[in-house]
Image (tube, rainbow, N blue to C red; front, top):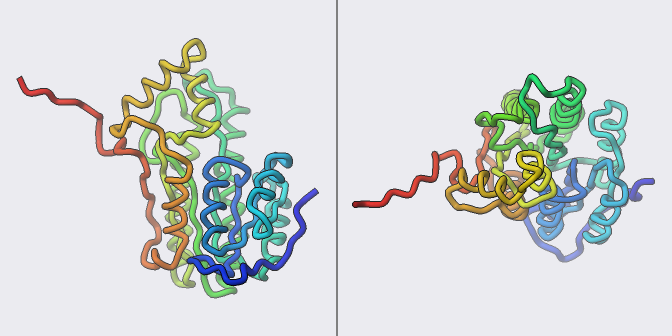
Length: 275
């Protein structure tokens, strides 16, 4: 059962997203929910999409009347059209879309990764984005523009041993983003990607256990050793950049992948001591 669609007008609320309709996949928790909180705080109305109905309902309830939700498998073509239509039914347009749905997949060398696991990662992370873009781009062309933000990863900019499926999927998202940006630009549609380093969410806990199930704390130290700021990001820190890219303030930003990585892509965190 899905949250009932409704028109969303925030009364006297003023903000960058006042009277704008925002669609968020992977919206039940983590970055998706943190972004929804930003959009609602600044006057937007959001439609959250996820496959976990319990978490989705709880997230929508926490956001109040500005939020509705739709339970869907984002890798399914029919269900994609349905959740887009549900979001459209609110204000008869979609001004902003955050394509955030994703899974981490197994931690294993490529020759030890089951093809079924690879296919599942590509379906949730890449096929879902392709399907969403195929629905959103013509819709936004008809309404005269829009903004799409895609959640890639620092793994979409570099390789990580033991995460072949995830890395491939996040690189693919950057390619889809750039292509969609070129196709959308003549119609006032901007498309960008954020590329976070590890964020303090359920996913990073799964990765720590995947890298070292005997000692997730050692895995955490190993991961943090590659982040100069020596901590994981908070979901809200990623959401702040998403909100900026989605807003009119970023009106000349399109076709780019923005790292949010605590310095990880700048190089290794070496501490030099003078003798």
